[in-house]
Image (cartoon, rainbow, N blue to C red):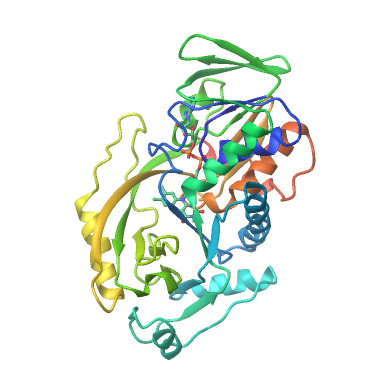
Length: 365
Ligand SMILES: Cc1cc2nc3c(=O)[nH]c(=O)nc-3n(C[C@H](O)[C@H](O)[C@H](O)COP(=O)(O)OP(=O)(O)OC[C@H]3O[C@@H](n4cnc5c(N)ncnc54)[C@H](O)[C@@H]3O)c2cc1C
């Protein structure tokens, strides 16, 4: 069983499959923990709050799996800080949370100001607070999944590039950049921003677009560790600004705008911050924080987006396609790892997958 891609999804699948006693070979083109793709950096936002009950329910199942990963790895990976959504879009999220049986609060502007005096908001906006919002230690999560997969016998290869996939009868041949031909009964393609051209080599054409995103890191005096994550839907409904605190480094937080980056080629993309977008983020933070924080740095990162912003999790012959991104996949990783393993072994997955089919019209090129 071969897995292409050692990001958070590929390493989650390697852990899930090797823990079931399956022989696993994981091939990663760079080194594990690199910052060239989508899983680099220190933190990710975990939340139950979504506009759609399908994702609310998946997030609940994922939370259980994060706790299991923490106990298997003997490491804290997820710390609860609460999640505050701001704006008209909160009403849609409230309906989705209710449909999934999850609790939440509607704090007033006065309650928000009293509870988090570091923030300031315009009058008349709606606030939805979900107490189980949390922060994930992204780099530690990948490390933990790798350690557990290796301990369960998985073979993990770095600097191994798969150039082509050739379905053959019941199985598939994977051709590496060293012209090695690896035969396997099945392969998981968790290649992130590089997925589309690799799948095309197997005759699978999907509309998966890599974009260049960025988040700007700051540090504020004292209070940082007790603030929730923020998503400010009213500021820009399609590209909402967000704030993600880092409770593991009190005072530090990052901010950015979701889905605001240009389409790029992952092999030639820049690592430089976009000055206009950085200025936009600094401006938004200046409006939202009572006192200006210190700017630390801006990091770039890649999304792989689908036109309908839904994931691709499906099996096509000997290939299992894993593109759970569009900038919101990390929080589901240990659950997705389990689902990918189920698609390989033929066991029933714990979540309905019809929404994530590869042959849905939105993905047609
Ligand atoms: C700025 C930013 C903020 C985000 N914030 C959040 C958040 O708060 N919450 C959340 O849930 N999600 C968030 N996400 C999304 C989340 O990080 C991604 O959905 C997730 O990391 C995708 O993981 P992946 O394993 O699919 O991709 P990747 O980590 O990119 O893994 C793909 C791997 O495949 C390797 N590879 C590619 N081609 C080949 C090949 N031919 N041969 C061998 N190896 C290959 C690559 O080197 C890479 O390591 C954010 C993303 C970004 C960019």
